[in-house]
Image 1 (cartoon, rainbow over the protein chains, first blue to last red):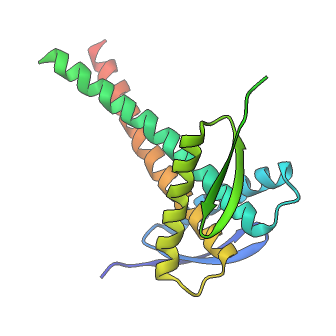
Image 2: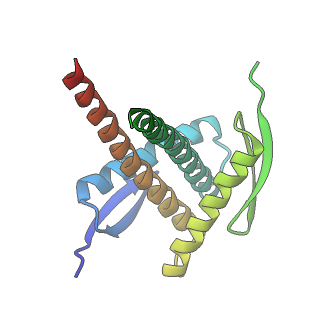
Image 3: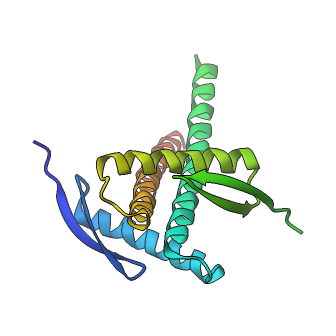
Length: 87
Length: 87
């Protein structure tokens, strides 16, 4: 059976209990990253309610993920092309 | 001056106006990704309020980002090691 860790994290003044296979240190680090990004977005848009702020933060994270995925795939593709040339 | 696109996106039944340098198609794709992830998390936790759901979605996105970043850095490191060997 898969072991699940439980960890309480603080994000933008609220406490959430996270449960998952990831190590507590990792969950804390990820939560701190989200908290920091929420504050950055809030500082530029202090009129936002918390729910909208959280959705915009999720969009921001998803956008960063997609950008990194594009770079990762481009790197993998460039390696495959190099390997083709070596054959 | 940097041009900013404005695009309306629907996420979990709410409409948000996004503004940024990214192309509208990309913003729509990223928003659809967030919408899908919110529904996945909600299906497993239907008791969540929308704000908590959005925060958990942001955490989920940040976790995926960190995991991908780890893989990306490991790939770059492995290339640097290979290059060192070639010198």
